[in-house]
Length: 295
Image (cartoon, rainbow, N blue to C red):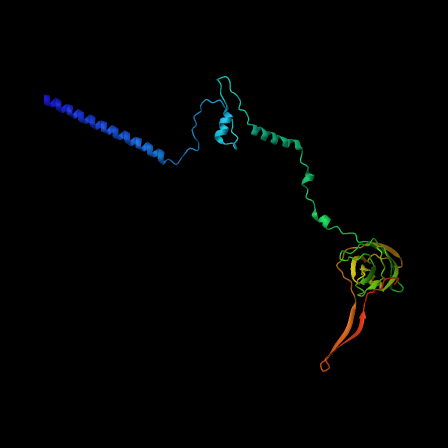
């Protein structure tokens, strides 16, 4: 009996030892898994746990110190009891933002005129005033002659490319497409309002009269013998009344036309034996008048 009791006690002791070892093994294994799981977890909180302690400073000062001077902290709601809840106090910076946002209401309605696009081409396309020219027309149906009386010009502008001190204006006339040569007035000296009172005649058939266009070009003859364009006026004859003298006054317009100084016909000959070059001027035509009135 004693042997059996000793054997039973020994078996119980062995079982208890194995149970204790097993329990210890399981506990250590679970603890190890928990530690490994925390170390291998990809999530890391972006905040720090701060233990709040009693302080003499205000909550806004504490938050402002921890969050930095450039960040406006939001004051949390404070609870003082079951029956009382204080409302959050707006930060001074938030008050300034709200005040600036509310100031937009003071502008009133939108003015559509402020958003209209100005046409920049209006000022660029305005034609400068270069002066005006006055003349009369009379068509003689019996002689098939168009008579042009050049009266005067007024308020002539100084050409941009001409730096002469005074204007010496004159006018050229042509009838297109019937005529290809120019008729020219006399040069008026030192005036911006020349008086011409000159008559010119163009021979043109009545059947071709209404398809013609009369061209006036005003030039300045400078002291250094340069001919500079002041402006040009164009009059189609489609509404001209025959046998009735009509007076016209036209504004001068800018033009790129240059003074036609005429044509010259000459011949060249070279004598090789004598080593001589011979130049023979045969004729010239459509030469402009270069004399100034009164000289």
